[in-house]
Image 1 (spheres, rainbow, N blue to C red):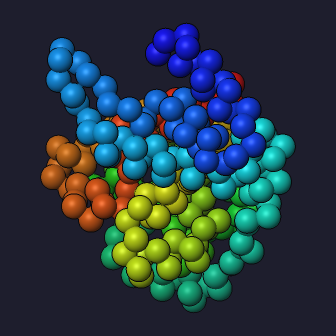
Image 2 (cartoon, one colour):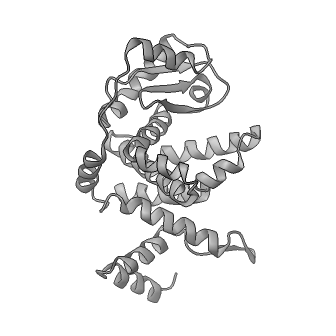
Image 3 (cartoon, rainbow, N blue to C red):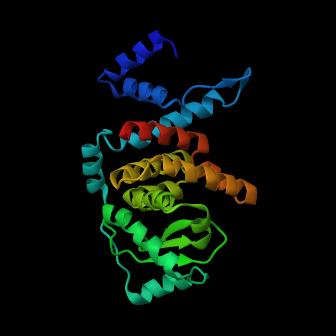
Length: 257
């Protein structure tokens, strides 16, 4: 980018009008313009602009990127924790049709996740490790956290903390996300996913981890999904591209440094 363009961006960021700030921020994120390598355009302008807009709207939900503002905003958005009773907890686990894993490695992983659970005020959330070849971490009924043995094999504890932070972030936009799913609003769903990515990066920074570790596990999971043929058209409609997610994480990693 030329010096004159940098000056234009700086001027735009000083503007009070949100539209100008949005365009400037999208440009800074580096995901709104086409990239040319060896004379070939490797991404279309349309998809770049859509992803830039979604990323900008996602982080605009914080209001500001200063740590104090983000902390306050997350507190405002936080939903009350729900603790299932023993019977419901048992039914939730049985509904997964997967055997429970245990052992010292499992106990250590659970202990390593506690800082993330504490940060999002889910300290007492039940955590189960289930035996599965699918690398996943997810919430069931907003009440139980499931980790699979496969993801333990391919990710470090730090990377798993990033994934768990992303999953817990879904709770901040639970109702909005549900409405977007019902309306089949793919753009809004992708925006929510980017918001959760941002929460994951911020959480890692707050608990003393490297926000970039989340980017690394995203790359690995995407590669595994492609290799196993498990990536679906539905996921591409509801989830941002790896390119957009990596760009956002790189921007936030620098911003939170």
